[in-house]
Length: 502
Image: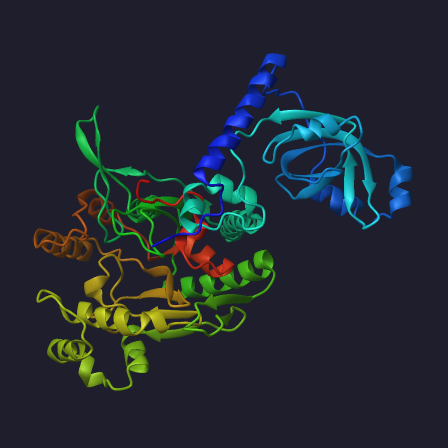
């Protein structure tokens, strides 16, 4: 498949690079080619915020001198434009600065001192009374009209993507603000931020295939963590009643628009609480997050167009109460041809799955079969904010069984736009029950399931000392940012997503 790449052709690019290297050689001969003494005292956005409303004459009378620095993104003869970390600002090329401007290439980083003025059109500019080349750019920026259009190059060369696409920088600034808000929210609720090992002797806390490494001094294989859960719950045993960690996890699985081998999770645990408490907390946190960081509880999502139709824009209103449905009820709701009798026994559920053309393994029990039906027929249709509850015990090895129905657990997953955003449950604090479930997972691993859990004897020992009734939850930060910023792929919200070698 041919891809559109709006960068110079290799021959042209090589010629431009050669010309810039020649300029750099001349600069080296004249002295320090990469000086580090210039200190800007102003940024573009701050100047606009402070002086943008001043009229031209008042600003001129003020005679305010500033020093600014940034990357040259336009060179129009009489005016240049630089871009700093906050925004862009114009520079007026004085007669004395013309030779400097003429020798400057797009992409160069320069420092300028001069008076702040406003043009007849109302644009702020700085006169180039003093100017200095701080960094010579050897590679040309992409074509100014088309930008960097090739998506794969944008991911591989994120540094260029950030330079030429301001909306990309804004997305990652929002990501940072989202994480900052979450920290502040949980801190205010009395949670303590902690850190747990990323290198683990036993991978646990989730069902996933781990990355394996080797520690030479200890002479043992170790695993990059797939989740911090079991370590965090050890801390609850130790007396920390409310804790959280914003952590990097690693899973040796496939790549997709929703999956990256390493990703960021928020996990938090609250003693003397159940999964209903965490659903309430999650709903409140996301509502406040959207309102305070994004500016509105209404989140917009653009759905891909079908055929020649315009893309559909869907609204998620986080100000309204989130829907709550059990796995069992959601299957019946989205499969009107099924009745309760069709999915409440192993034989009938398997028959229903077969009619729905869902492949099954002989070793799966009723709970796993129900989950397969749910994932294939329900999950992608959970458009509005929805908590799905009461997951079967068979697929929830760390969750507490329901007192009213031991076939299911006190667990939920949270969905928006057909994507799972969060997973939480009342924690299993029965050490004997946990040991039995670990044994069942070991049997599945011995049967060929690479994602089944290991038996963690130390964690069982920790539970034997006694863990108070606790609820815990994990929220996928990457998927949450995707939802809030209307991003179609997880790679759009990761600064450096993993990709195959060039």
